[in-house]
Structures are given as structure tokens and as C-alpha cells.
Length: 160
Image 1: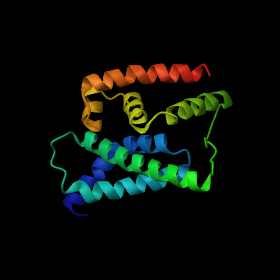
Image 2: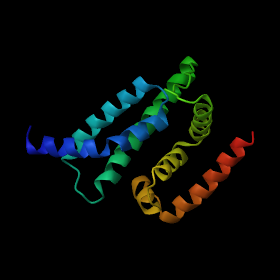
Image 3: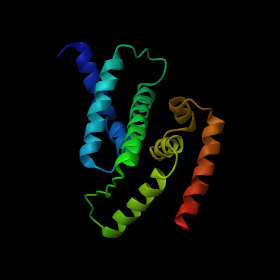
Image 4: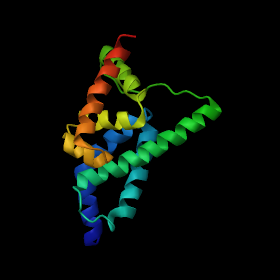
């Protein structure tokens, strides 16, 4: 394995959880998540030479992952509208109640728009407002505003 491949492999190992987290926010199906993960790895590899280091590597990985998953979600939505298919929620589950709560949370988050869903995902991952803004290309103030609005939306959804 050459130096470039080794460097890429090390970066992916370090950020594997990040990529999977993004994938799970956009799909409930384990096989689909694994496909998304593989597709994102291909995109990252294709763009690895052009990554100039102007942003943190984690920011770049989030950006590539989110953009790919948002595009995937749009394609899936169009396909679902044409075929009118629905999928169930898949969990490996230890506790029925915990799985039900997680399912409800994911359902509420998935009801949000794609940008809002991305903001919540990044926030739940513990990223700073600066990092979220850099990944999504919005101001820190806009991130703050969106999170307040999103939290209110999620609270309203829980009362329904």
C-alpha cells in the first residue's frame, strides 16, 4: 500500500463513526446504510487529491457525507413518490421502550427539511456552531437560530 492509500485508510478509520452517523440519519435500513457508506468512501477517495486542507478534514468528510446523503434522500423521495413504497424501522434493539423512543425521535428528525436534519445531526454529534456553519456553509448566527427553531419544531411534534 502506498503512502497516499495508507493516509486515506488512517483518515477513514479515524472518522468511520462520523460517516456511519450521517448515513443512519438518512436511512433506517442497515444494508442501505452500508451502501451509502461505501459510496461515500468512493466519493472521498475521488476527492482526496483535491482536498487542499483549507478546512479541517472532519469538516470535509461531513460535507461530502451530508451532500451525498442529501442527494440520495432526494432521489429516494422521488422514487418513493413514484412507487409509493414504505419501509419499516429496523433496530437491533435491546429494550422495546428505548427502541420505540429512538424510532420516534428519528421519525421526528426525518420529518424535518434536509438542512434542518443536517443541523440536528451535526449538533447531536457534538460539533460546535462554528464547525456546523463551516460544514453547511451558513453563519454561526444562522446555526444558532436554526437550532432554536428546530428544537421548537421537535417539541411540537412530540405533543402530537
